[in-house]
Image (cartoon, rainbow over all chains, first blue to last red; front, side):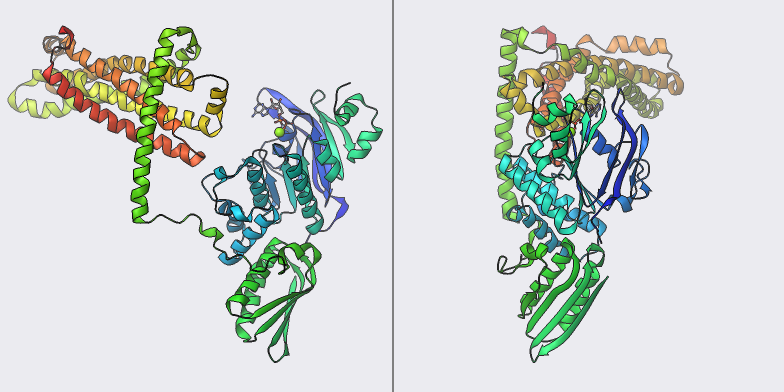
Length: 254
Length: 378
Ligand SMILES: Nc1ncnc2c1ncn2[C@@H]1O[C@H](COP(=O)(O)OP(=O)(O)O)[C@@H](O)[C@H]1O
Ligand SMILES: [Mg+2]
């Protein structure tokens, strides 16, 4: 049972630094994502949004710092996969990451078969329902390669939501989508958030989308390598005195 | 977390109440209970009241739809009452009068026998077309490479040669040494009976230089470079990298295929010489240990029996093998359509095709060398 309580932290990121062999990409990042909110991670391309996201879901071991889901510490999946936490997460990767050898329906059914013992009929029904939600019930039997990029993204979204996870991660959901589809996707995201109170973390560089859906946002800076602003997107835009924040929200460098 | 109650409302009406929360965790038991009620109550008109639900997720909705479809199957009418607003979109029967027929998970059905034959024919035609146009592409690339050598990408060539040739040295050395030793060992058992010990040198040196050396090397290269090229080019195909080259105005044959063919064509004879030497040495070791043939006697005999032309024949073969292996690897890579699975089959198919083509070519060479034993005289 999910509750909307904007004061209980669903995810706490504490002093996390992360990076790759040669370089630290994000340094000493701390923030909370509250239960039931839509939280945006913003920043220019290459500032480390995906890196932070990979650290949050346990794909990348942070160099320092910890990530908590509720009271539980998230360990890197490679060291100690915590299935009960992973079960609560739904993840939409930047590239979709559909399994190319399975049909669309089987892609969506995979987490259901893995984590539930629902009978085949109900799984079929649920797959159909999730595909309806993203408007692709007609393509259920196609292979991913037979879909356009935007459609693949929507199938990936259906797969991420198959188990109605408590927390959904979206890495640049509207990248590569036309404005109309991307606006529809925003509405879908809001719909998921409001209907069953899913906590949603959206990684995006699109201002319009962030303004439309996010309750709060953080802004990462590629030079400082850390969070330079935190708050509701509109407030950040209107009240920021920092030049870098203003430049990001105005959409041009000054 | 959920409660289900039911009562008979009128003589043919059944009213079922669901209350509480229905989520993925309870979905299985809700499903079972609902279906049990349906089976135990032979009433025509079913009403399902969802008014008491505080929480209903996707799995819950799927259970309800499944229930509705089961009702339809049993020819009962079903009415959903008090649908929660968030679920209206998915449960409102006015918008979705017929629930899904649930065949979506059956996937793509396996083709029938006749269909498979037809598919095989179409594949054969496509494959032939691919091979011919690929050969055309290679010839085109080499001729334009000869006309303007500047357009070939030479920087990567050394690395390709290193990967295909130098990196294969350890495995070639070990395998051919063992191969020579095994040949000598098998021969020793027979030759000893006739006191013809010294002829082990003839047997090992001729069979290694003419057949085993080139073939063994070619097989190793197929497994290493042939498969590697198929996977590399195939992944590039999947990621649209080949298309990216094309629109940049770069000929993928000139950029990818030509350097690889040259690298392997050069590496294969080099590795074959190495394999020849190591094979003969392997034979020498066994001859020394189990046939009492001294190394001096062994190599004298090798010198007497092994002609330059024998070694050259092997090297010419291996040059051809090299060209074939690199071409087949790249061809299979270019044929990739779709995703990761297709890359896997391209890799498999590259190795299988290589083995087949190498064997056939080897047979052709055997015939050719039989009719023209002295290859350098023309
Ligand atoms: N696998 C990797 N290995 C090394 N560096 C990487 C890797 N992935 C990303 N980076 C570097 O990390 C930085 C941040 O990348 P990323 O998190 O993908 O940015 P964003 O998602 O914000 O566009 C970039 O400078 C990039 O070069
Ligand atoms: Mg990214």
